[in-house]
Image (cartoon, rainbow, N blue to C red; front, side, top):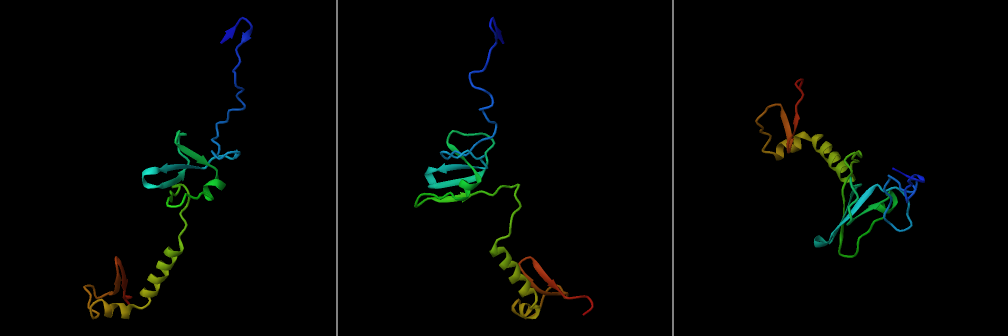
Amino acid sequence: MESRRGPLKSAVPSNIVSPVRRCSRTACGRPAVATLTYVYADSTAVLGPLATYAEPHCYDLCAEHSERLTAPRGWEVVRLLDGSAPARPSGDDLEALANAVREAARPQERAAEAGGGRTADPMEVARRGHLRVLRSPDN
């Protein structure tokens, strides 16, 4: 748009407005990576991946502030995993896997506990949930 004096200029220089959302914490200018929302009825603080849009009752946090987040006494913090990040197995997952391998290595004991060694499939030696241990066809 032009006036008689020339092109109109914006009141706010465009280099000050950043398309990157910043951390909501005071004096922190780092880029936001997570969004914090409070559920007051449940006394819960929910920290999840950065929301698509900035909401008025949500707070955007940088990586450092999202990792150090604590809630008031009596409140619970729920951390939602980012679907794009690879899931890392927990210690409980690894321990459960090790226990399953140990039990599979003792097929005679499990077969005796499961009903006197009688199974529907003569190749089946032991069973745990949906997992089965089968006898080798050579034996």
